[in-house]
Image (cartoon, rainbow, N blue to C red; front, top):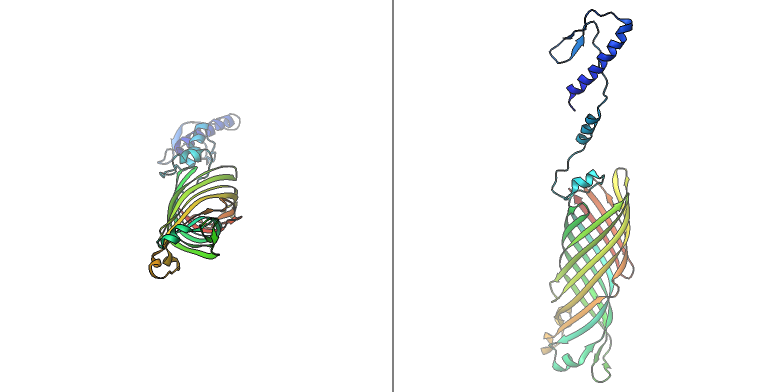
Length: 329
């Protein structure tokens, strides 16, 4: 607002009121406006200078002041951020990095175990039927993300995974009805680099929110000739509030995992050491998850304006625990 314009309007009102009072109580000899200083403020001769304290604004001036009170969003992302702010939405900082540790245990179904390079009799006639396995894994990942739109986040993942899959197999000789050989523990230890990408879509009403997270990751194993590919879909609903000025969130949801695992390698790499020419024997294991869905419960707390802590637990046949420390700017 222009200060001089406001001051002139107030002075005009003051002068009008002074004339109304002077008709009853005062006698003026001059009503000329004279300047008492080098500034633009003038006074009426015969009246003592009065400090004008009125701050009444006209409607156009009020509208102009309201616009100037709000900062214009000057960052490139998210797109349509200013429109969302004008509608009253509070947006997170657009860029983020986080470190995440996740431990998971889940049952698997072993679809097949096959051997090769041992000998024509064993390769052709020794078979292993389906069985159950228990997999444990630990993953440490680094994630970078960006809010492309006020409701759409995209991110990339790079990390390290190690774990094991332990099954009890029942090989048999495939002659006629099948001759069982016995039960043997079959353990696969794996580790490798995990990488992938994902996206999150969010929405909410008041303090309630809902989100859908979808990501694809692949773990390239270093010892075994195989990989672990995973598609994860996680819907969540939750509630957010302020606690001593810090943003807090609680949610519940579910996780869907579609994991196909194929492990291949040398038998001696998994501590099955056969003598002589059998030492070059190989194996191939195919397995999948016993249950693709499990329940999630989690929460997030803002430690500072830029740092937040996230914790989430998975319940059901697949159990998991995740801790993440994030930084946004």
